[in-house]
Structure formats: C-alpha cells, structure tokens
Length: 273
Image (cartoon, rainbow, N blue to C red):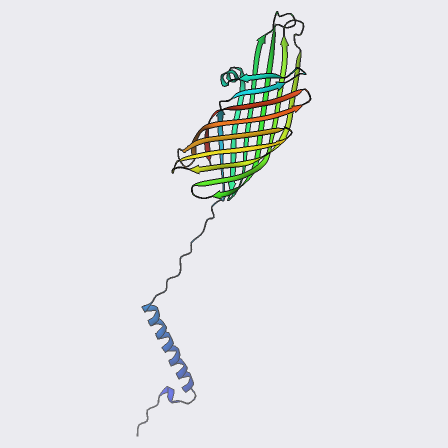
C-alpha cells in the first residue's frame, strides 16, 4: 500500500504552514488594493514668504509763494509778500523730497525741504555801503508714524503723529562804503509736535486722490500743513502727482520772528519699491 506524505501534515510544521498561508493572503489582498486604487504622494510646495514691507520715495517741486511777517537783526517786524517767480529769481539751491514705508497697517513717513536764496540790492546814496545782500536758508524736516484706521481696496486713511523740525537763517552782508565786508546773521531753530490724517482714495485702477491735513505746536505757537492732489499710476513702479499745498508757522523768539504762510501748486513723481 502506497502512502502519500505532505509537508504540512507534519504536526511540527503545521502552524508554520498556516502562518505562511495567512501572510500570502494578506500580501495578495494588499496588491489587489494598490492596483485598484493607487495613492500618489502629495507634491511638496515650497512657500516663499513675500516681504511685508513696502515703500516709496517722491521728489517734488513746490511752486510756492511766501507771505507774512518777519523780523531779524533787532529791526521792527516787516510784512513780506514774495511770489514764486520772486523766489526763483533769488534761488541758489532747492531740494524737496518725501518718503514712506509701510508694514501692514503701520507706516512711517517723512518730508524734507531745503531752500537757499540770495537777493542783492543797491543801497540809497551808497555812502555806508553800495549794495546789501540778504541770504536765507530754510530747512524743514518732518517725521511721522501712522496707523491705518481704514485699509481696503479703495480707501486708506491713516492717523499720524510725530514732529517737525525747522531751521531758518538770515544773513545780511554789505559791499562797498564804510560797511564793506560786514556780515550779520539771525536765525531760529525749533521743533513742533505734529499730528493729523493722511489718505489715498483710488478712483480707478490707475487714478487716485491723495492728501494730508496736519497741525501742531511746540517751539512755535502754531503750525499747520494741508495737501490735496491727484495721482496717476504710470506703471507698477511710478506715479505722477499734481496738487496744491499750503503750510504755515507762527514762531517768535527774542528778536527773531517768522510768521508766514507758504502755498502754491505742487508736482511730483512717486517711485514705489
């Protein structure tokens, strides 16, 4: 009688055969599942954070006249009324520049103005001096910090506060006669706290309104500054702006008095970065 033996009939290896069968079944089912529903690994996307800071710089020309009351060198107060053409005729050098940086709703902004003029006039009779020359240097620098009360697609309105520094120097010199070579100077330097509003309203995708209204005091009895303008975005980087600006300050210390209003059209170019 012929006997047939199977490997798994042995009692010692029966458990191993069962385990191998179970593993094979699991492997087969896993292969079927992967073939029916393959799972692709999710792509890895590298995020590059964009800078939250934005900024702009804007050189401008303020075609302003100047009127008010001044006093220098211990002399009585005098009324002055100079047009823009009068200032240009006496102009030696001028630099006007505004800047701004923003981070979310927060901002810092500056305004810098420097003006140097010289006027020369003949003196009556020419006995004490043949000519008298008056030179004036005016420096104004403003630094403001701001927070956007409104910031949406159309309107941005910031409340701002900071300080404005002034330095005005007048020099009187004589040529010819008994006073030849004599030069005297008088000046005032002061700082005012300033605050107010600055804003921009987009009328179209490219055209917008811009402006500010500031007021304050400190070294001066009172100071103020108002601007209204229209801007146009030439491209993503450059804009052209035209408007009207008026500013005034009332300062007096000792023999020096500077109570004036400066106003006129303004033209500028804005570069954004």
